[in-house]
Amino acid sequence: MRFLMTINGGGPTPDEQLYAEMGRFVEELSRAGTLVATGGLDPNGTRMSATGGRVTFTDGPYAESKETIASFALVDVATKGEALALAERFWAIVRDGEGDMRLVYGPDGP
Image (cartoon, rainbow, N blue to C red; front, side, top):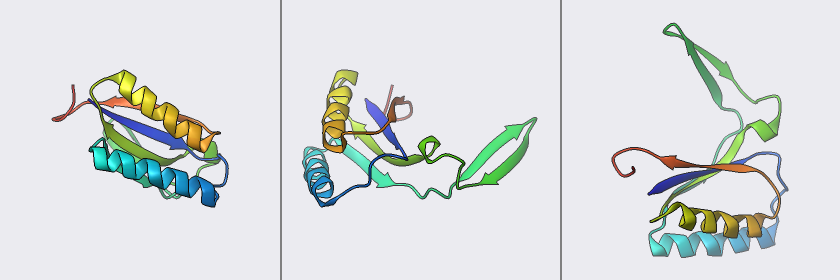
């Protein structure tokens, strides 16, 4: 099962300790083959909407940084419980913030 975990902006500013701890965590998940992809996202994205087949694009940045997805991790695990355990470890490192976790459907998912 693949889960996409997203982290919203507006959280604490990372420091050297957080970078070091997160680096070790990412390395561990990468070695285990659990981490499929991870990355930070540019806050100046483009919002897309469609009505009746007509597409509208609106450039960011957005009004509130907490509305913006700041980074993501795509993990491959056997159960949702495993994904929740990884999320709990992640938030123990980061300590403050908000995010979301969603099951990914597709060729490699349910």
